[in-house]
Image (cartoon, rainbow, N blue to C red; front, side):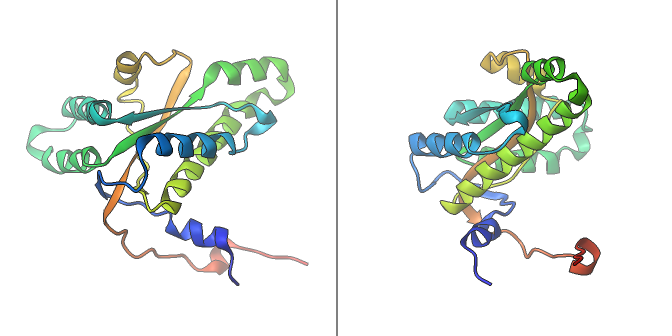
Length: 199
């Protein structure tokens, strides 16, 4: 069976060999990211996802922040692989920072007390969908990316550097760029272990 959406999903892979020569200009990249997030669903149409896009010096600064934070917890004699990984993200064209607005979540908890315990869960689902939407939209333009999670290690420094509202909780970082090296072969577990169908 052929399905265009499935084919696009197959293009979305974790790409670690990233470069700066992307197919779109920065304005078009930002527009694409905005549309992908705006069209991503959220519970009660709460639209809790927030996004910051970093280019040029700001992009480099993020990975310097991560490096400085990691130097405090990774032994110096084994820091080489960590630095190599961070440098691969620095080599990318830009980074998308994904946040969730906890003020919106708290407001929903107050408005709909019956579902209060679920709103933080639904917020995590919303950011996951937004992340996937952006990642897939970039892949459709032949822009590679990989999803990273250096939060909460870098949270305070990120908020200070870019004057991020206190209620925005950092959930993920998506470095993106031209595809310098393709993703490896993807392995799939047996369908019988994942799916069940009943009539």
